Amino acid sequence: RFTITRRRYLDETGKALVTLPAFAADRALMRRIYEGMRFIRLYDQKRVNLQRTGRMGTSATALGQEAIPIGVASAMREEDVLVPSYREDGAQIWRGVKPEEMLIYWGGNEAGQHPADPRVAQDFPVSITIGNHALHAAGVATAMKLRDQKRAAVCLFGDGATSKGDVYEAINVAGVWKLPLVFVVSNNGYAISTPLENQTAAETLAQKGLAGGLAVAQADGNDIFAVRQLMLEALERGRSGGGATLIECLTYRLNDHNTADDSTRYRDPEEVKKRWAFDPLKRLEAWMMAQGFWSAADEAAMEARVATELERAVEAYLAFPAPKAEEMFAHIYAKLPRQYEDQRALAVRLDHG
Image: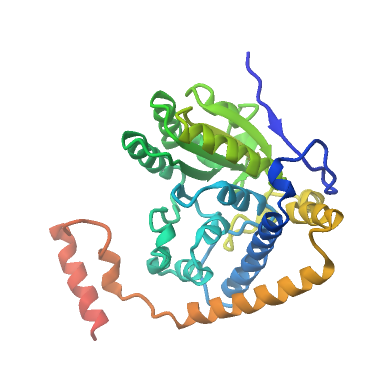
């Protein structure tokens, strides 16, 4: 017998259901958190527009899930290490990656995942492959433990990744070695087009950490207070030697899986329409307004400021030089195997005419 606890502080209208965490009283922090969530929504819209006009490749947005990347990143310390999947631009930007660097990456240039800010030099790049970065995160956390560092690694992935062997292996080693590691599962109901009930018979995804000996919990993933508070507790547990944690964040993606997807093929549009009532931004905005932390004038000023910032980022992205063909060989092997030498030589000739 076991119990999975679910953390929730705000209802869908933004009213507090229980006493809020202590950080809720920090007006400056809450304003920054709200602005971070709003920035990601506007950034996502800009990114979709770029793709639709042929100026960017395929990418995945966080529409409806903004509380997760911002709640996670805002709870982390600078010395912690983020190991993200492909829907956590918000977490990377919060920690110091520039918006234009993210755009450069989604435009097809790996240079975008070599951020200029040294504060995030230790963070990992986007992982497009599903679940294998959980093992990388376990390796990072193992190094931290062996070095007796008061740091933690944070690994984010979607519900589909919990059906991968890589994730189970990472959970197992994190439990055995009591690693300073937090796994965050964004359960948005669909692994691309596969609904949750067709990929697992488990009642919760959180319980998948129990067999590995991890602390586990569920969060209302559209409640920024629930996500951030559980993260603060999990990070403290990891840094103090208490071992790893798996947090399942229950949410819903309001957009397609990515800009190459058409979710109307597998989701009823009425289902999506109903889920807008759980929008994390509307919920937090209502609470902020009620507390006197935010106003319509603040909203207008912020949107103008963000629009200017995004236009600057887009201009920087579009002006960034395209990668040369030979660069595809640069970061794969320490010593390039002989069978690829001719291919690289051809790429060099193409680059130099």
